[in-house]
Length: 194
Image (cartoon, rainbow, N blue to C red):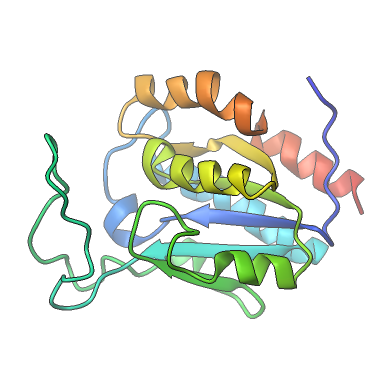
């Protein structure tokens, strides 16, 4: 296992879809409230270290015409979303200096200015967490990997719709993109990188 150090000047914490409409769902192997608590710890420490914090949420226009709706065996739910669907959970209200990204797809890079905001801040390493492991987090991780970012995937600061799907990603997919670490390991690496 590679030793991990994180330079706050070139590292960003990117948290995916920790918003009311998604955090309300049942997740595994960690409850969404536990993922939010870990994400909050990470965000607080990243801010204190002067590292970038990026909060990503998914939202749609009132008429829903900007939502993906391809033919699929398991299509995305249709119909209106609750009015507070896209609001960040109270524990992760954006703070001054945070970057807020609104996406319309699973991945946070496509159709947004995420890459522009990261490059302007000199970010080379992305620390990634959120809900859901196998949708928004994995899609963003794939895109970040293809853009040559170093990735740290925080296993206990994300959860999926099932424990099996989460474990598959963190065991078989994520180790090919970057380093899979715990919240405690990330916090220690951030402290060591100062």
